[in-house]
Length: 392
Ligand SMILES: NC(=O)c1ccc[n+]([C@@H]2O[C@H](COP(=O)([O-])OP(=O)(O)OC[C@H]3O[C@@H](n4cnc5c(N)ncnc54)[C@H](O)[C@@H]3O)[C@@H](O)[C@H]2O)c1
Ligand SMILES: [Zn+2]
Ligand SMILES: [Zn+2]
Picture 1 (cartoon, rainbow, N blue to C red):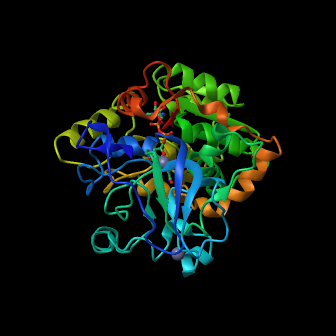
Picture 2 (spheres, rainbow, N blue to C red; picture 1 turned 120 degrees about the horizontal axis):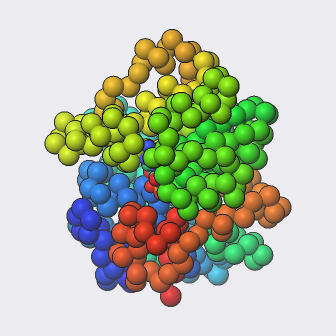
């Protein structure tokens, strides 16, 4: 089959790889009908995630039609159209039973030693996301093997299109969990840094969960426009003195009740002094993360407020304002998304017409154009907000 493969920093290739086969009784193989490039794939492409190997198949937002199934699979029949979480979870361990599928104890034997050394524990395997996360081939491909098929994926109803269902694999549940982790109360004001795909879904999720005002922050005009179309007020961080001053102005000096960091480690290397310093440090091996947004949310949120961090960080964050965090009495939640816990209720929201996730797609193209589109998405060229790829 053909797939998008990693070949080092900035080098994604469309090439021939071995077809997957059924390895366990609970596996299915799908013929991919649609897949997408995620902001998290950019960390791979930018060489920020260790343990990627040349030739690794990338991609973790994927759906398709079941073409083969293991002997234990009864949930799906050949020909079913399904969408798969990016997280691989066993469904049986303590974490899975408690809805914490991204922390599954059993699906990352390959990365276990390394992860234990780095973070003290082992988390779930992820599709196409390095050998530290299990070394599972990804779904930017013509075919994908899905382990633990009875746990993660769900069937897509006929009246739900690929573009509506695909983002249940990651960014819709991620935006949703970001809003859930912000513990939104009816009437809250929520500020969201980053109007990429995750930020866009966080905006809509926060409003669906009862926020009265959402203030979204970015610098890319078309992303700010899409945020406004979703019901947010916006701040262009490149056009204000500081985001802090703008937010205080907009909230009578109180600050937002909750702040969401939907940017992560690759915050723009401009716009604030610490962003410039972070950039120099990461380029000179003196730091691993550009953590400006983490500092900004601590400073901006109201006293006693809540912070939610879906944005991904790599290792050690410099100059986190722990003093302010304690003095202001803040709470922070984060994590890879427990997609399995949200995928069915969110499919119901789509079926009920509460949200149509296809709004986010700006580029629908053949899989073969993937290498160029990785760059278009990374560089935010051509109005690109979300790329959906079709193998055919
Ligand atoms: N927790 C999870 O399970 C999970 C799942 C998917 C994605 N993510 C992470 O979420 C983050 C966002 O993903 P995405 O697909 O939306 O990526 P993206 O790169 O398309 O979006 C990031 C946005 O942040 C904006 N930005 C940069 N610096 C900023 C700043 N200082 N202030 C405000 N905005 C700024 C950029 O202009 C861009 O629009 C990434 O870190 C990604 O890895 C996490
Ligand atoms: Zn992702
Ligand atoms: Zn488990």
